[in-house]
Picture 1 (spheres, helix red, strand yellow):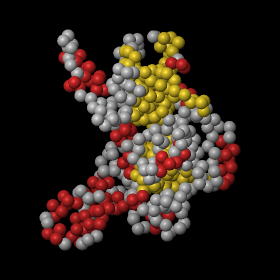
Picture 2 (cartoon, rainbow, N blue to C red; picture 1 turned 90 degrees about the horizontal axis):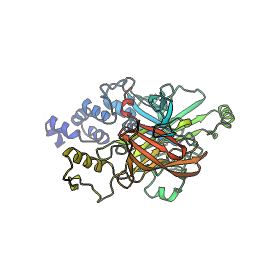
Picture 3 (cartoon, rainbow, N blue to C red; picture 1 turned 45 degrees about the vertical axis):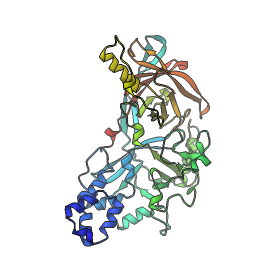
Picture 4 (cartoon, rainbow, N blue to C red; picture 1 turned 30 degrees about the vertical axis):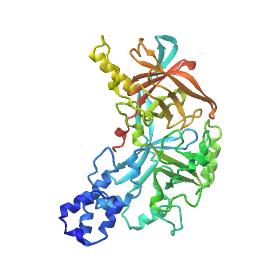
Length: 467
């Protein structure tokens, strides 16, 4: 092999640019390249690339980072993208934070819950007929009830094979099609299997989608920008499984790194009890024989990472009164191709101070374009995946003024539209409302017809991904 004639340091530098699969291929060529390609620092870097928010320093419980990477391959995308939202239960959905716990070598996902520590309300001084509901959210992970738990299993062991096969008994099938049984420890009467999903082709969503909820089970819904989508199971996970011979995927190349599924299988006696209990509930969860199928999707980090020009992008939590706390994606779309804003095009007025001119340029850069608040979780009236409020123009086209009365003194107000519906998402409509741009981390929506002001606050996901 002529490559081995190069200095080891140079070969090592080249191998840093290879993907894990390519690195594995190189290691199979000869003994010299094997010794270099299996270096710990190369495989530690590949693990680290998929674990945000913390530095991975140990391959525990395995003996090498290469073995650790292989143990969780091809599921490293779970902690990499951190935020995952599901199409069940019902219209409500679920938001899950995925992370890697290097103390146990485990990929785990927990439902995000938010508690409002201030439920007091009062009248607005500017209009005493309007009620302001205070909102001080505290975020916690439901650690007692994991949604995903995938321990590191030594490659090649019997335990690994049992996990790979899961609930599918045909061992001739691809390991990517096999469900991975998860020991969640929550309920002995249920069984949960992690399952890969296969992306639909670019033209398939247009062929199957309907114009209204539930959009033929497409996940994520069309309101969320996404590189690809998969076939979900509908609001109650009631579809038969598998949907086709091509899903779950057969090959590594078919695996979606933006979606996955969890199938929960119920014992027959448990099914009967659950169905009986669910009937009087406002938003029931009918369980079909064989279990429930939940589809999860993630968000492109670009969508929730704020920038100087798009400072409101992010995952937020809002106060929805009797429905409790709900999570939304504040989406500020990119500018259309060819549409740019040049702050230098503004001209300073003759009597305008430098400070005022600088602020005017900043405002012109920030307050422009459209803003949408899309529900990551929903309620029995307006479900997950729907727009909860929107602003057509943050700039002069939607500007209503600046408030002078406390507690909103100095706050910019823009014209918005709020989404409302009857229970079961019937007779939905968008009502005229106002959005208060309090700060880049706090917004308030004035539901004018309800004479109510509710708050939305930014969620710092990065604080939740470190065990």
